[in-house]
View 1 (cartoon, one colour):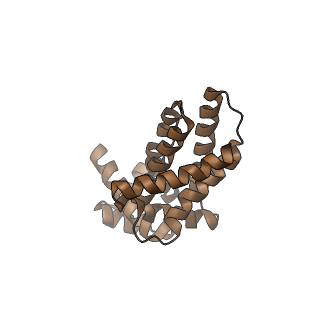
View 2: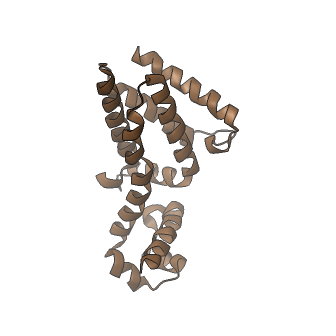
Length: 187
């Protein structure tokens, strides 16, 4: 039973990345190699399937990790962890990220899966937790917006090499540049 659900979720991810919310349940069922009625039995409708797929990916990648990283006592080390982690995740999932941003800009996503707002909210919570633990008063809204701009620009703007394909030295150099730009607005 769980295998069919995973099969449907994986297929739905592929189809949604290609077509966004314009994807049909028929296309998803075909990709998953299941009857269309099976989709409806498990997810009721396309919107529920979409939300399940996206939340499944985003919750694994965002919220669970940032609270753990926020416990880092050194702010620069904390920012390095966040930036490296987020750039890697977003870069590896660039097609899905682009689709979610596009759907968000068209107003097609409910709040549960609105990626730009999820990124911002997750960052702001993690930053607030970190700076509260450090006893520092920092404009976490501004810092979260700066970080969000860095992350989204890495996916949207053309890069010679996506972040996740850079060698370790190139990744470290880029992460340090971004970290220094964020540190400059914190001080």
